[in-house]
Length: 169
Image (cartoon, rainbow, N blue to C red; front, side):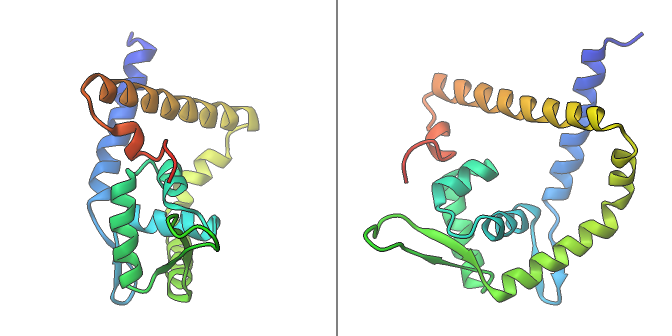
């Protein structure tokens, strides 16, 4: 009989492998507007958190601050979001979605409504305590992996923690 840890690790490996493949393929949400999943999900976070700054966006998405800055510039050039600065703080950059960004997000939501139905139908069939346990496990694993990666980065002299938005903007 296989140890539960082995089954858990193998399941995570499969999730990671398929997610990695999916993350490398752009999806055309509107004619002429194709986005990688992390670009789309960055727009989603900005729409859910209007006025979010670079540091907080990095923390929420797990994407390094430098990458967030580059990606948001590109998304702004494409008309999907805009940046602004608040009065009294010329350094800190904040973001909000545009009308086009909202339309793309709505198309993204429709995509998930259709394509995610099979998964969520299975998930919805579980008891509430089972769903809560799964979510708790995934959050704990994500927190563990962040701590693990931060620790490894510190040992190797990398700026991983700073890049992920753990310092002030």
